[in-house]
Length: 274
Length: 300
Image (cartoon, rainbow over the protein chains, first blue to last red):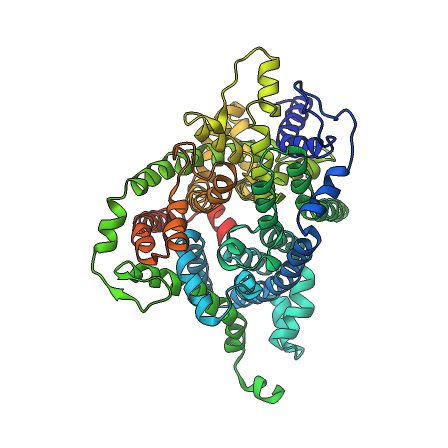
Protein backbone atom coordinates (compact mmCIF):
# COMPACT_ATOMS: atom_id res chain seq x y z
CA UNK A 1 0.00 0.00 0.00
CA UNK A 2 1.47 3.32 -1.02
CA UNK A 3 1.85 6.04 1.55
CA UNK A 4 -0.66 8.56 0.21
CA UNK A 5 -3.32 5.88 -0.18
CA UNK A 6 -2.81 4.84 3.44
CA UNK A 7 -3.02 8.44 4.63
CA UNK A 8 -6.22 8.97 2.62
CA UNK A 9 -7.78 5.85 4.16
CA UNK A 10 -6.70 6.94 7.62
CA UNK A 11 -8.30 10.36 7.17
CA UNK A 12 -11.58 8.84 5.91
CA UNK A 13 -11.79 6.30 8.76
CA UNK A 14 -10.96 8.93 11.38
CA UNK A 15 -13.70 11.21 10.00
CA UNK A 16 -16.29 8.40 10.09
CA UNK A 17 -15.50 7.84 13.77
CA UNK A 18 -15.88 11.56 14.50
CA UNK A 19 -19.26 11.86 12.74
CA UNK A 20 -21.58 11.12 15.73
CA UNK A 21 -19.79 13.73 17.82
CA UNK A 22 -19.96 16.28 14.98
CA UNK A 23 -23.70 15.77 14.44
CA UNK A 24 -24.39 15.91 18.16
CA UNK A 25 -22.52 19.21 18.48
CA UNK A 26 -24.08 20.75 15.37
CA UNK A 27 -27.63 20.11 16.60
CA UNK A 28 -26.85 21.49 20.06
CA UNK A 29 -26.45 24.95 18.49
CA UNK A 30 -29.74 24.86 16.56
CA UNK A 31 -32.04 27.74 17.55
CA UNK A 32 -34.77 26.55 19.97
CA UNK A 33 -38.42 26.53 18.91
CA UNK A 34 -37.58 26.70 15.21
CA UNK A 35 -38.32 23.79 12.85
CA UNK A 36 -35.53 21.27 12.37
CA UNK A 37 -33.93 21.32 8.91
CA UNK A 38 -35.19 18.73 6.43
CA UNK A 39 -31.97 18.70 4.45
CA UNK A 40 -28.49 17.82 5.63
CA UNK A 41 -26.38 20.75 6.85
CA UNK A 42 -23.43 20.76 9.20
CA UNK A 43 -23.74 24.31 10.57
CA UNK A 44 -27.23 25.35 11.73
CA UNK A 45 -28.80 28.49 10.21
CA UNK A 46 -28.69 30.79 13.24
CA UNK A 47 -26.25 29.10 15.63
CA UNK A 48 -26.97 29.92 19.28
CA UNK A 49 -25.91 28.79 22.74
CA UNK A 50 -29.45 29.34 24.08
CA UNK A 51 -30.03 25.59 24.51
CA UNK A 52 -27.38 25.35 27.20
CA UNK A 53 -29.10 28.08 29.24
CA UNK A 54 -32.41 26.25 28.84
CA UNK A 55 -31.06 23.07 30.49
CA UNK A 56 -30.06 25.03 33.59
CA UNK A 57 -33.62 26.36 33.77
CA UNK A 58 -35.17 22.89 33.51
CA UNK A 59 -32.95 20.79 35.82
CA UNK A 60 -30.35 21.72 38.48
CA UNK A 61 -27.51 21.00 36.05
CA UNK A 62 -24.86 22.75 38.13
CA UNK A 63 -25.64 20.54 41.13
CA UNK A 64 -25.39 17.37 38.99
CA UNK A 65 -22.13 18.56 37.42
CA UNK A 66 -20.62 19.20 40.87
CA UNK A 67 -21.78 15.73 41.97
CA UNK A 68 -20.03 14.15 38.99
CA UNK A 69 -16.89 16.14 39.78
CA UNK A 70 -16.98 14.93 43.42
CA UNK A 71 -17.22 11.32 42.26
CA UNK A 72 -14.21 11.54 39.92
CA UNK A 73 -12.21 13.62 42.42
CA UNK A 74 -12.56 10.75 44.92
CA UNK A 75 -12.35 7.81 42.55
CA UNK A 76 -9.50 8.72 40.17
CA UNK A 77 -6.72 9.42 42.74
CA UNK A 78 -7.78 6.36 44.73
CA UNK A 79 -7.66 4.23 41.59
CA UNK A 80 -4.16 5.48 40.74
CA UNK A 81 -2.96 4.74 44.27
CA UNK A 82 -4.36 1.24 44.80
CA UNK A 83 -3.98 0.22 41.14
CA UNK A 84 -0.31 1.17 41.00
CA UNK A 85 0.34 -0.47 44.39
CA UNK A 86 -1.14 -3.72 43.15
CA UNK A 87 0.74 -3.52 39.84
CA UNK A 88 4.00 -2.73 41.64
CA UNK A 89 3.55 -5.56 44.13
CA UNK A 90 2.74 -7.99 41.34
CA UNK A 91 5.72 -7.01 39.20
CA UNK A 92 8.19 -7.86 41.96
CA UNK A 93 6.79 -11.19 43.10
CA UNK A 94 8.46 -14.45 42.01
CA UNK A 95 7.59 -15.48 38.44
CA UNK A 96 5.12 -18.19 39.54
CA UNK A 97 3.11 -15.91 41.82
CA UNK A 98 3.05 -13.26 39.10
CA UNK A 99 1.41 -15.75 36.74
CA UNK A 100 -1.16 -16.68 39.38
CA UNK A 101 -2.11 -13.03 39.94
CA UNK A 102 -2.43 -12.41 36.20
CA UNK A 103 -4.77 -15.40 35.84
CA UNK A 104 -6.89 -14.25 38.79
CA UNK A 105 -7.10 -10.78 37.23
CA UNK A 106 -8.18 -12.22 33.88
CA UNK A 107 -10.88 -14.32 35.54
CA UNK A 108 -12.25 -11.27 37.36
CA UNK A 109 -12.27 -9.39 34.03
CA UNK A 110 -14.69 -11.88 32.49
CA UNK A 111 -17.18 -11.94 35.38
CA UNK A 112 -20.19 -10.19 33.78
CA UNK A 113 -21.13 -7.00 35.60
CA UNK A 114 -24.84 -7.76 35.57
CA UNK A 115 -24.20 -10.87 37.68
CA UNK A 116 -23.08 -8.59 40.52
CA UNK A 117 -25.86 -5.98 40.45
CA UNK A 118 -28.28 -7.45 42.99
CA UNK A 119 -25.77 -8.89 45.43
CA UNK A 120 -23.64 -5.76 45.44
CA UNK A 121 -26.85 -3.87 46.20
CA UNK A 122 -27.46 -6.15 49.20
CA UNK A 123 -23.84 -5.74 50.31
CA UNK A 124 -23.97 -1.93 50.09
CA UNK A 125 -27.32 -1.92 51.87
CA UNK A 126 -25.81 -3.95 54.69
CA UNK A 127 -22.89 -1.50 54.86
CA UNK A 128 -25.28 1.48 54.82
CA UNK A 129 -23.76 2.78 51.58
CA UNK A 130 -26.97 2.98 49.52
CA UNK A 131 -27.61 6.52 48.27
CA UNK A 132 -24.04 7.59 49.13
CA UNK A 133 -21.01 7.98 46.85
CA UNK A 134 -19.25 5.15 48.71
CA UNK A 135 -21.33 2.72 46.67
CA UNK A 136 -20.31 4.43 43.42
CA UNK A 137 -16.58 4.62 44.14
CA UNK A 138 -16.26 1.25 45.94
CA UNK A 139 -14.29 -0.37 43.07
CA UNK A 140 -11.67 2.41 43.31
CA UNK A 141 -10.37 0.74 46.50
CA UNK A 142 -9.04 -2.06 44.31
CA UNK A 143 -7.74 -0.07 41.35
CA UNK A 144 -11.26 0.04 39.78
CA UNK A 145 -10.58 -2.69 37.22
CA UNK A 146 -8.06 -5.55 36.93
CA UNK A 147 -7.45 -4.07 33.48
CA UNK A 148 -5.83 -1.00 35.08
CA UNK A 149 -3.82 -3.13 37.50
CA UNK A 150 -2.50 -5.16 34.57
CA UNK A 151 -1.57 -1.93 32.77
CA UNK A 152 0.49 -0.82 35.78
CA UNK A 153 1.95 -4.31 36.14
CA UNK A 154 3.08 -4.23 32.52
CA UNK A 155 4.66 -0.80 32.93
CA UNK A 156 6.52 -1.70 36.16
CA UNK A 157 7.77 -4.98 34.73
CA UNK A 158 9.52 -3.13 31.90
CA UNK A 159 11.76 -1.41 34.46
CA UNK A 160 14.97 -3.44 34.86
CA UNK A 161 14.79 -5.36 38.15
CA UNK A 162 18.28 -4.13 39.03
CA UNK A 163 16.90 -0.63 39.53
CA UNK A 164 14.52 -1.82 42.27
CA UNK A 165 17.29 -3.89 43.89
CA UNK A 166 19.65 -0.91 43.86
CA UNK A 167 17.03 1.25 45.60
CA UNK A 168 16.54 -1.49 48.16
CA UNK A 169 20.28 -1.79 48.84
CA UNK A 170 20.38 1.98 49.34
CA UNK A 171 17.95 1.44 52.18
CA UNK A 172 14.73 2.52 50.45
CA UNK A 173 11.64 0.66 51.67
CA UNK A 174 8.94 -0.75 49.43
CA UNK A 175 6.83 2.41 49.54
CA UNK A 176 9.85 4.62 48.90
CA UNK A 177 10.90 2.54 45.88
CA UNK A 178 7.34 2.70 44.57
CA UNK A 179 7.15 6.48 44.98
CA UNK A 180 10.56 7.61 43.79
CA UNK A 181 11.73 4.88 41.40
CA UNK A 182 8.73 3.07 39.91
CA UNK A 183 6.09 5.82 39.57
CA UNK A 184 8.27 8.42 37.80
CA UNK A 185 9.17 5.78 35.20
CA UNK A 186 5.51 4.95 34.53
CA UNK A 187 4.28 8.46 33.71
CA UNK A 188 2.54 7.59 30.44
CA UNK A 189 0.72 4.68 32.10
CA UNK A 190 -0.39 6.96 34.95
CA UNK A 191 -1.84 9.41 32.43
CA UNK A 192 -3.57 6.58 30.55
CA UNK A 193 -5.14 5.04 33.67
CA UNK A 194 -6.15 8.49 34.96
CA UNK A 195 -7.98 9.27 31.70
CA UNK A 196 -9.59 5.83 31.42
CA UNK A 197 -10.82 5.78 35.01
CA UNK A 198 -12.04 9.38 34.71
CA UNK A 199 -14.07 8.42 31.65
CA UNK A 200 -15.42 5.35 33.45
CA UNK A 201 -16.66 7.17 36.55
CA UNK A 202 -17.78 10.31 34.72
CA UNK A 203 -19.91 8.35 32.26
CA UNK A 204 -21.08 5.68 34.72
CA UNK A 205 -24.85 5.31 34.30
CA UNK A 206 -25.57 1.90 35.78
CA UNK A 207 -24.10 2.26 39.29
CA UNK A 208 -25.83 5.59 40.08
CA UNK A 209 -29.06 4.16 38.63
CA UNK A 210 -28.86 1.11 40.91
CA UNK A 211 -27.42 2.57 44.11
CA UNK A 212 -28.46 6.25 44.28
CA UNK A 213 -32.02 7.20 45.11
CA UNK A 214 -32.30 10.88 46.07
CA UNK A 215 -32.25 13.43 43.29
CA UNK A 216 -29.77 15.71 45.03
CA UNK A 217 -27.15 12.95 44.67
CA UNK A 218 -27.67 12.31 40.95
CA UNK A 219 -24.72 12.52 38.58
CA UNK A 220 -24.68 13.87 35.01
CA UNK A 221 -25.55 10.61 33.18
CA UNK A 222 -28.70 10.24 35.30
CA UNK A 223 -29.47 13.93 34.72
CA UNK A 224 -29.36 13.33 30.96
CA UNK A 225 -31.88 10.55 31.37
CA UNK A 226 -34.27 12.79 33.34
CA UNK A 227 -33.83 15.49 30.71
CA UNK A 228 -34.79 12.97 28.03
CA UNK A 229 -37.85 11.80 29.98
CA UNK A 230 -39.08 15.38 30.31
CA UNK A 231 -38.44 16.53 26.73
CA UNK A 232 -38.55 13.56 24.42
CA UNK A 233 -38.39 15.34 21.08
CA UNK A 234 -36.61 18.60 21.91
CA UNK A 235 -33.48 17.50 20.05
CA UNK A 236 -31.44 20.71 20.29
CA UNK A 237 -31.95 20.68 24.07
CA UNK A 238 -31.02 17.00 24.44
CA UNK A 239 -27.93 17.41 22.25
CA UNK A 240 -26.88 20.45 24.30
CA UNK A 241 -27.11 18.26 27.40
CA UNK A 242 -25.07 15.56 25.70
CA UNK A 243 -22.42 18.10 24.66
CA UNK A 244 -22.27 19.48 28.21
CA UNK A 245 -21.64 16.02 29.65
CA UNK A 246 -19.04 15.30 26.96
CA UNK A 247 -17.07 18.54 27.29
CA UNK A 248 -14.83 17.68 30.26
CA UNK A 249 -13.74 14.14 29.28
CA UNK A 250 -13.07 15.15 25.67
CA UNK A 251 -11.09 18.19 26.83
CA UNK A 252 -8.95 16.02 29.10
CA UNK A 253 -8.51 13.46 26.35
CA UNK A 254 -7.21 16.09 23.92
CA UNK A 255 -4.72 17.35 26.54
CA UNK A 256 -3.54 13.77 27.14
CA UNK A 257 -3.14 13.22 23.38
CA UNK A 258 -0.96 16.30 23.13
CA UNK A 259 1.12 14.94 26.02
CA UNK A 260 1.50 11.52 24.38
CA UNK A 261 2.42 13.13 21.09
CA UNK A 262 5.29 14.97 22.77
CA UNK A 263 6.21 11.88 24.77
CA UNK A 264 6.46 9.55 21.75
CA UNK A 265 8.26 12.18 19.66
CA UNK A 266 10.80 12.64 22.48
CA UNK A 267 11.34 8.90 22.69
CA UNK A 268 11.92 8.75 18.93
CA UNK A 269 14.46 11.58 19.23
CA UNK A 270 16.33 9.77 22.01
CA UNK A 271 16.38 6.54 20.04
CA UNK A 272 17.71 8.36 16.97
CA UNK A 273 20.47 10.04 18.97
CA UNK A 274 21.75 6.88 20.60
CA UNK B 1 5.60 1.86 63.45
CA UNK B 2 8.65 2.33 61.23
CA UNK B 3 10.64 -0.12 63.32
CA UNK B 4 7.86 -2.66 63.19
CA UNK B 5 7.53 -2.33 59.41
CA UNK B 6 11.22 -3.05 58.95
CA UNK B 7 10.91 -6.36 60.70
CA UNK B 8 8.38 -7.60 58.11
CA UNK B 9 10.27 -9.39 55.32
CA UNK B 10 10.48 -7.68 51.94
CA UNK B 11 8.22 -10.21 50.19
CA UNK B 12 5.45 -9.79 52.75
CA UNK B 13 5.64 -6.03 52.44
CA UNK B 14 5.12 -6.41 48.69
CA UNK B 15 2.10 -8.58 49.35
CA UNK B 16 0.81 -5.87 51.68
CA UNK B 17 0.65 -3.54 48.65
CA UNK B 18 -1.49 -6.15 46.93
CA UNK B 19 -3.86 -6.39 49.89
CA UNK B 20 -6.42 -3.74 48.78
CA UNK B 21 -6.60 -5.43 45.38
CA UNK B 22 -7.09 -8.86 46.94
CA UNK B 23 -9.76 -7.63 49.37
CA UNK B 24 -11.53 -5.84 46.50
CA UNK B 25 -11.55 -8.95 44.34
CA UNK B 26 -12.98 -11.04 47.17
CA UNK B 27 -15.53 -8.54 48.50
CA UNK B 28 -16.67 -6.90 45.25
CA UNK B 29 -16.41 -9.82 42.82
CA UNK B 30 -16.04 -13.33 44.21
CA UNK B 31 -18.34 -12.93 47.21
CA UNK B 32 -21.23 -11.23 45.34
CA UNK B 33 -20.88 -13.71 42.48
CA UNK B 34 -21.08 -16.68 44.84
CA UNK B 35 -23.89 -15.11 46.86
CA UNK B 36 -26.04 -14.57 43.81
CA UNK B 37 -25.28 -18.13 42.79
CA UNK B 38 -26.90 -19.39 45.98
CA UNK B 39 -29.61 -16.74 46.17
CA UNK B 40 -31.34 -18.49 43.27
CA UNK B 41 -32.77 -21.03 45.74
CA UNK B 42 -34.30 -18.43 48.05
CA UNK B 43 -37.16 -16.01 47.96
CA UNK B 44 -35.69 -12.67 48.96
CA UNK B 45 -36.92 -9.07 48.63
CA UNK B 46 -34.26 -7.33 50.76
CA UNK B 47 -36.90 -6.54 53.42
CA UNK B 48 -38.01 -9.88 54.87
CA UNK B 49 -35.53 -12.63 55.78
CA UNK B 50 -34.73 -15.02 52.89
CA UNK B 51 -36.89 -18.13 52.58
CA UNK B 52 -35.71 -21.36 50.97
CA UNK B 53 -37.94 -22.24 48.01
CA UNK B 54 -35.98 -24.94 46.17
CA UNK B 55 -36.09 -24.63 42.40
CA UNK B 56 -39.21 -22.45 42.30
CA UNK B 57 -37.21 -19.45 41.05
CA UNK B 58 -35.82 -21.47 38.16
CA UNK B 59 -39.33 -22.56 37.19
CA UNK B 60 -40.54 -18.96 37.40
CA UNK B 61 -37.67 -17.53 35.36
CA UNK B 62 -37.24 -20.20 32.72
CA UNK B 63 -40.93 -20.47 31.85
CA UNK B 64 -41.22 -16.69 31.57
CA UNK B 65 -41.64 -15.80 27.89
CA UNK B 66 -39.91 -12.50 28.47
CA UNK B 67 -36.89 -14.34 29.83
CA UNK B 68 -36.72 -16.63 26.79
CA UNK B 69 -37.06 -13.63 24.51
CA UNK B 70 -34.35 -11.75 26.39
CA UNK B 71 -31.90 -14.65 26.02
CA UNK B 72 -32.62 -14.88 22.28
CA UNK B 73 -32.17 -11.14 21.85
CA UNK B 74 -28.99 -11.16 23.92
CA UNK B 75 -27.50 -13.91 21.77
CA UNK B 76 -28.60 -12.15 18.57
CA UNK B 77 -27.11 -8.77 19.16
CA UNK B 78 -24.71 -8.99 21.99
CA UNK B 79 -22.87 -12.01 20.65
CA UNK B 80 -23.31 -11.51 16.90
CA UNK B 81 -21.66 -8.07 16.63
CA UNK B 82 -18.63 -9.21 18.64
CA UNK B 83 -16.66 -10.78 15.76
CA UNK B 84 -17.46 -7.78 13.56
CA UNK B 85 -16.34 -5.37 16.30
CA UNK B 86 -13.10 -7.18 17.07
CA UNK B 87 -12.17 -7.76 13.44
CA UNK B 88 -12.99 -4.13 12.69
CA UNK B 89 -10.86 -3.00 15.62
CA UNK B 90 -8.01 -5.16 14.36
CA UNK B 91 -8.25 -3.80 10.81
CA UNK B 92 -8.25 -0.26 12.18
CA UNK B 93 -5.18 -1.07 14.29
CA UNK B 94 -3.46 -2.45 11.18
CA UNK B 95 -4.37 0.71 9.22
CA UNK B 96 -3.19 3.05 11.97
CA UNK B 97 -0.02 1.12 12.87
CA UNK B 98 2.23 3.45 10.89
CA UNK B 99 1.67 6.99 9.76
CA UNK B 100 2.85 10.54 9.52
CA UNK B 101 3.20 13.26 12.13
CA UNK B 102 -0.47 13.30 13.02
CA UNK B 103 -0.86 9.57 13.59
CA UNK B 104 -1.55 9.98 17.32
CA UNK B 105 -4.37 12.43 16.61
CA UNK B 106 -5.84 10.08 14.00
CA UNK B 107 -5.74 7.22 16.51
CA UNK B 108 -7.39 9.55 19.02
CA UNK B 109 -10.34 9.92 16.63
CA UNK B 110 -10.97 6.15 16.83
CA UNK B 111 -10.89 6.27 20.63
CA UNK B 112 -13.04 9.39 20.95
CA UNK B 113 -16.52 7.78 20.76
CA UNK B 114 -15.54 5.69 23.80
CA UNK B 115 -14.60 8.83 25.75
CA UNK B 116 -18.14 10.22 25.44
CA UNK B 117 -20.39 9.25 28.42
CA UNK B 118 -22.60 6.29 27.48
CA UNK B 119 -25.83 8.23 28.01
CA UNK B 120 -24.65 11.13 25.83
CA UNK B 121 -23.58 8.64 23.17
CA UNK B 122 -26.98 6.91 23.28
CA UNK B 123 -28.82 10.25 23.00
CA UNK B 124 -26.62 11.23 20.04
CA UNK B 125 -27.48 7.99 18.24
CA UNK B 126 -31.14 8.37 19.11
CA UNK B 127 -30.93 11.64 17.20
CA UNK B 128 -28.84 10.23 14.34
CA UNK B 129 -31.35 7.39 13.84
CA UNK B 130 -34.39 9.67 14.08
CA UNK B 131 -36.60 8.60 11.12
CA UNK B 132 -37.66 12.12 10.07
CA UNK B 133 -34.91 14.62 10.90
CA UNK B 134 -31.98 12.38 11.83
CA UNK B 135 -28.83 13.07 9.81
CA UNK B 136 -28.53 9.42 8.73
CA UNK B 137 -31.95 9.29 7.09
CA UNK B 138 -31.47 12.77 5.60
CA UNK B 139 -28.30 11.45 3.96
CA UNK B 140 -29.98 8.25 2.78
CA UNK B 141 -32.88 10.24 1.30
CA UNK B 142 -30.46 12.64 -0.37
CA UNK B 143 -28.90 9.76 -2.29
CA UNK B 144 -32.31 8.53 -3.36
CA UNK B 145 -32.97 5.68 -0.92
CA UNK B 146 -36.11 4.99 1.07
CA UNK B 147 -34.69 4.76 4.61
CA UNK B 148 -36.18 2.53 7.34
CA UNK B 149 -37.76 3.89 10.51
CA UNK B 150 -34.93 2.38 12.59
CA UNK B 151 -35.80 2.29 16.31
CA UNK B 152 -39.52 2.78 15.67
CA UNK B 153 -39.62 -0.40 13.58
CA UNK B 154 -39.36 -3.79 15.33
CA UNK B 155 -37.46 -5.15 12.33
CA UNK B 156 -34.86 -2.38 12.19
CA UNK B 157 -34.40 -1.60 15.90
CA UNK B 158 -31.77 -4.32 16.37
CA UNK B 159 -29.60 -3.34 13.39
CA UNK B 160 -29.90 0.29 14.53
CA UNK B 161 -28.50 -0.44 17.98
CA UNK B 162 -25.80 -2.75 16.61
CA UNK B 163 -24.76 0.02 14.20
CA UNK B 164 -24.29 2.40 17.13
CA UNK B 165 -22.10 -0.05 19.07
CA UNK B 166 -19.74 -0.39 16.07
CA UNK B 167 -18.35 3.02 17.02
CA UNK B 168 -17.24 1.79 20.47
CA UNK B 169 -14.23 -0.37 19.64
CA UNK B 170 -11.52 1.58 21.48
CA UNK B 171 -10.35 -1.20 23.82
CA UNK B 172 -10.02 -3.78 21.03
CA UNK B 173 -8.26 -1.18 18.89
CA UNK B 174 -5.69 -0.34 21.58
CA UNK B 175 -4.93 -3.96 22.49
CA UNK B 176 -4.58 -4.95 18.81
CA UNK B 177 -2.31 -1.96 18.26
CA UNK B 178 -0.07 -3.03 21.17
CA UNK B 179 0.00 -6.62 19.88
CA UNK B 180 0.93 -5.52 16.34
CA UNK B 181 3.71 -3.36 17.77
CA UNK B 182 5.22 -6.38 19.50
CA UNK B 183 5.55 -8.40 16.29
CA UNK B 184 9.20 -8.10 15.24
CA UNK B 185 9.37 -6.30 11.85
CA UNK B 186 11.94 -8.87 10.68
CA UNK B 187 9.13 -11.45 10.40
CA UNK B 188 7.26 -9.37 7.87
CA UNK B 189 10.45 -8.46 6.02
CA UNK B 190 11.50 -12.11 5.81
CA UNK B 191 8.11 -13.03 4.31
CA UNK B 192 8.41 -10.26 1.76
CA UNK B 193 11.95 -11.33 0.81
CA UNK B 194 10.55 -14.81 0.21
CA UNK B 195 8.17 -13.25 -2.29
CA UNK B 196 4.94 -13.18 -0.25
CA UNK B 197 2.39 -10.55 -1.29
CA UNK B 198 1.29 -8.15 1.45
CA UNK B 199 -2.06 -9.98 1.56
CA UNK B 200 -0.29 -13.34 2.06
CA UNK B 201 1.96 -11.81 4.72
CA UNK B 202 -1.09 -10.53 6.53
CA UNK B 203 -3.02 -13.79 6.24
CA UNK B 204 -0.23 -16.29 6.98
CA UNK B 205 2.22 -14.36 9.18
CA UNK B 206 0.45 -11.60 11.09
CA UNK B 207 -2.99 -13.13 11.69
CA UNK B 208 -1.80 -16.45 13.22
CA UNK B 209 0.36 -14.57 15.73
CA UNK B 210 -2.51 -12.26 16.64
CA UNK B 211 -5.25 -14.93 16.65
CA UNK B 212 -5.13 -15.90 20.36
CA UNK B 213 -5.29 -12.24 21.39
CA UNK B 214 -8.26 -11.66 19.10
CA UNK B 215 -9.99 -14.66 20.65
CA UNK B 216 -9.45 -13.40 24.20
CA UNK B 217 -10.61 -9.94 23.11
CA UNK B 218 -13.81 -11.44 21.71
CA UNK B 219 -14.72 -13.06 25.03
CA UNK B 220 -13.92 -9.86 26.88
CA UNK B 221 -15.97 -7.90 24.35
CA UNK B 222 -19.00 -10.16 24.80
CA UNK B 223 -18.89 -9.60 28.57
CA UNK B 224 -18.44 -5.86 28.08
CA UNK B 225 -21.24 -5.54 25.52
CA UNK B 226 -23.60 -7.45 27.77
CA UNK B 227 -23.37 -4.65 30.32
CA UNK B 228 -22.90 -1.72 27.90
CA UNK B 229 -25.95 -2.74 25.91
CA UNK B 230 -28.08 -1.97 28.98
CA UNK B 231 -27.23 1.75 28.96
CA UNK B 232 -27.72 2.02 25.20
CA UNK B 233 -31.00 0.09 25.15
CA UNK B 234 -32.37 1.73 28.29
CA UNK B 235 -32.03 5.20 26.79
CA UNK B 236 -32.75 4.43 23.16
CA UNK B 237 -35.66 1.97 23.17
CA UNK B 238 -36.25 0.69 26.74
CA UNK B 239 -36.54 -2.76 25.21
CA UNK B 240 -39.12 -1.86 22.57
CA UNK B 241 -40.67 -1.73 20.08
CA UNK B 242 -42.65 -4.87 20.95
CA UNK B 243 -39.72 -6.16 23.04
CA UNK B 244 -37.52 -6.31 19.91
CA UNK B 245 -34.52 -5.01 21.87
CA UNK B 246 -35.35 -6.56 25.27
CA UNK B 247 -32.13 -8.16 26.59
CA UNK B 248 -31.06 -10.17 29.62
CA UNK B 249 -29.68 -7.18 31.63
CA UNK B 250 -33.11 -5.54 31.43
CA UNK B 251 -34.84 -8.71 32.62
CA UNK B 252 -32.42 -8.94 35.57
CA UNK B 253 -32.91 -5.25 36.37
CA UNK B 254 -36.69 -5.44 36.27
CA UNK B 255 -36.84 -8.65 38.33
CA UNK B 256 -34.35 -7.49 40.95
CA UNK B 257 -34.82 -3.75 41.22
CA UNK B 258 -38.33 -3.44 39.82
CA UNK B 259 -40.16 -6.40 41.39
CA UNK B 260 -37.65 -6.92 44.25
CA UNK B 261 -37.49 -10.65 43.55
CA UNK B 262 -33.74 -11.07 43.82
CA UNK B 263 -34.09 -14.86 43.83
CA UNK B 264 -35.68 -14.97 40.38
CA UNK B 265 -33.07 -12.56 39.07
CA UNK B 266 -30.32 -14.85 40.37
CA UNK B 267 -31.95 -17.92 38.84
CA UNK B 268 -32.03 -16.12 35.47
CA UNK B 269 -28.32 -15.36 35.90
CA UNK B 270 -27.47 -19.06 35.92
CA UNK B 271 -27.55 -19.05 32.09
CA UNK B 272 -24.84 -16.44 32.27
CA UNK B 273 -22.81 -18.45 34.77
CA UNK B 274 -22.89 -21.47 32.50
CA UNK B 275 -21.76 -19.38 29.54
CA UNK B 276 -19.01 -17.70 31.56
CA UNK B 277 -17.84 -21.05 32.91
CA UNK B 278 -17.54 -22.39 29.36
CA UNK B 279 -15.59 -19.28 28.39
CA UNK B 280 -13.16 -19.75 31.29
CA UNK B 281 -12.45 -23.33 30.19
CA UNK B 282 -11.89 -22.30 26.56
CA UNK B 283 -9.65 -19.41 27.61
CA UNK B 284 -7.61 -21.71 29.82
CA UNK B 285 -7.09 -24.18 26.98
CA UNK B 286 -6.16 -21.40 24.56
CA UNK B 287 -3.69 -19.90 27.03
CA UNK B 288 -2.03 -23.31 27.41
CA UNK B 289 -1.86 -23.94 23.67
CA UNK B 290 -0.32 -20.62 22.70
CA UNK B 291 2.53 -19.90 25.04
CA UNK B 292 4.20 -17.75 22.42
CA UNK B 293 5.68 -14.29 22.61
CA UNK B 294 2.81 -12.12 21.47
CA UNK B 295 0.22 -13.35 24.00
CA UNK B 296 2.68 -13.13 26.83
CA UNK B 297 3.82 -9.62 26.17
CA UNK B 298 0.32 -8.22 25.85
CA UNK B 299 -1.43 -9.96 28.69
CA UNK B 300 1.25 -11.33 30.97
